[in-house]
Length: 411
Ligand code: 3MF
Ligand code: MG
Ligand code: MG
Image (cartoon, rainbow, N blue to C red; front, top):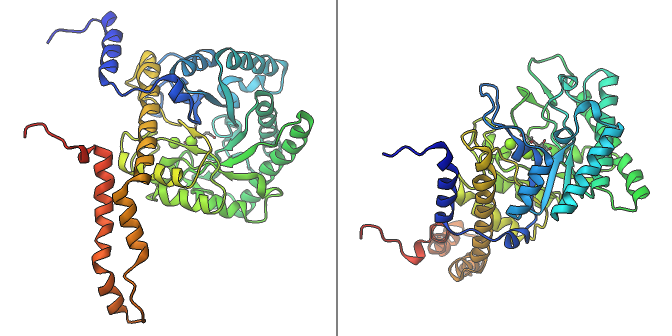
């Protein structure tokens, strides 16, 4: 085999990307409420056992590259772009002004801002620690992020309380910690009401994001369902301002069915924002790009969301693998993630219109038309109809794999 010299490798990647085909145009991609996180594109490949493999990239480069791909919206943590020490200072104002210019120059919008309450040493015992000064600082941080959000024209604020929990048992009182955490959210909502009024803007949609494990060993709000209970616990002064940002993998990680978790959030009227990615059950947060692991489940998730009129953001919260180069992040990782999502969204539309699935679903709902309350008789009368469950599953796989169009390799 002929070695591929370093200077020829990008051209090879570009040529093979073109050979893949099936790409959507930037204009087509921009029709979707697909949002690109600063932290996803800027992720350098580091982890507990992993050194970085990519050079750092700033917001200017990320925004420019997202624009070229056709990702129309940008999202960020406060400290992705503003060093902790600059928060609340003139340097924050200067950075926010520079971000605004970069977004405007590239025709992008900032859709969501989020507060980093997990990385800095001050949050070692969570943003709802016993010490009142830590909690005061956490409340100030979320309020400051609300201000940044309004300045950048965002619609959403997200909260991932990943450090709300513990490693060793008994040191914290869970009920008290949850009350304190609610106080931080209340501070953000109350500050938002004032800030929105002052700016003549609507208040932000405040969305909570659950993750079952990591970085704490035990997490106080590990699932979207736990968060729904928290929102309705009576601890929040403005529960109507607080909804959910489920993440696909975070629901899968604990062994849940993401589609069922999303359905429960939809029924509660709280599915406001959605982090899209992929991975495996009962593993750590591998944050693989959407539909690289579970494309059939992803098709079904999108059928659910499309058929229920979900119109919130699809946030590309994944980590480009550390084997992907800086060039590859924008040439391969993001465009292919966006295009798999769009293809599955289009397929979800096909599923909703599919005459086989439609007729089978209607027949199941119609039942056999027997009267009486004899369970044996009811079962016997419906028995043949129930076979349609498996037929529908086959039809979904057919649509996913294109089997209905015929597939030939060695035949
Ligand atoms: C961690 C996450 C986070 C959140 C982000 C938004 C770094 O697993 O998913 O991404 O999505 O903090 O609040
Ligand atoms: Mg994740
Ligand atoms: Mg997330």
